[in-house]
Image 1: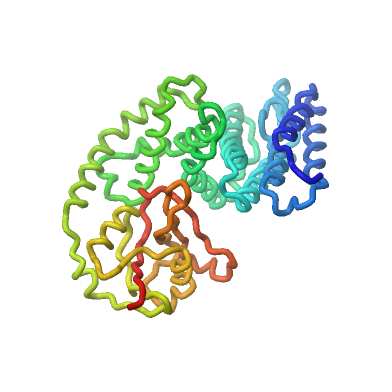
Image 2: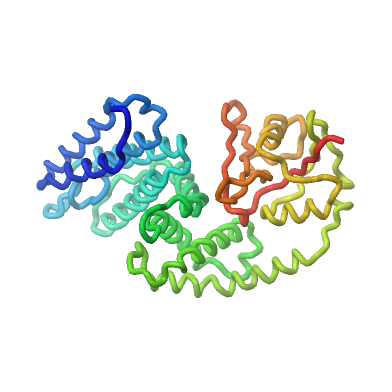
Length: 370
């Protein structure tokens, strides 16, 4: 097989499952297509994002719809909990593998979001019925939260390459992200604006709400419109106060001289850098500050920021585990940033991502060597 016709394989997987009528037939059919795609004879499959997506999709048939595959609704029992756990873990594993090869693969991002949402839903619904399903959150909450945060931080990036009618795939991702964010909405108040993490979450929620407003007249939502309206009403006064405070901050003059009194540049060959951060702020705030500082200070490009990371211990002043802004923009106009985590020191590939410019990341200034 030389090329993957993704739509053909999607239809094939669905037809195999749909033609199975009994519980045992559906489990057997799911295991069959899993085996077929894991062992698919496809040249170049190890570097194909879509191949790993199709493997993940085969496993996802063991998660959803739960009532028809691993749960006997008549006898109210889980038929094969171990198989269900394998399907969940493998779906998540292969979608992540697909996204590492192509971070813009909307099929894989949609499937990752679906798998997380379905597993959460399955667990909560069956728990209410007295049935204890396997749940990956309970086995490894850190990995689960990392996956949720990945969706939250990258969901908006998929709107540009969504070719479906009414942006259905990217909307599902964003609607699901908003559902997860909404669990924190009741805790928000004007006092929560003193917490950087609350501010970051609030601004992400605002961005998703503004995007979804474009589809107010559509009926094909995966969330309740009444919930969506109540979330808007809850966040509106808090966002208004936040925007007022930001206007005050942006109206103040930055004291560039004071910031530079305690920093001296380090020579890194073609450029030099400060030995201290300028703080944590949005991408636009960082560029405004650096413009006011003058003397050629700017954000580093992707090559320079990775050189800062490689030399972070000798330069000093960096905060391990934090992300730092870059000057470069992705084709969708979102700025890049790099994660400065010493656990990644031996990685051959820089941990550079693009994200919303309203997020709060740290700033280290550089300038061309004089």
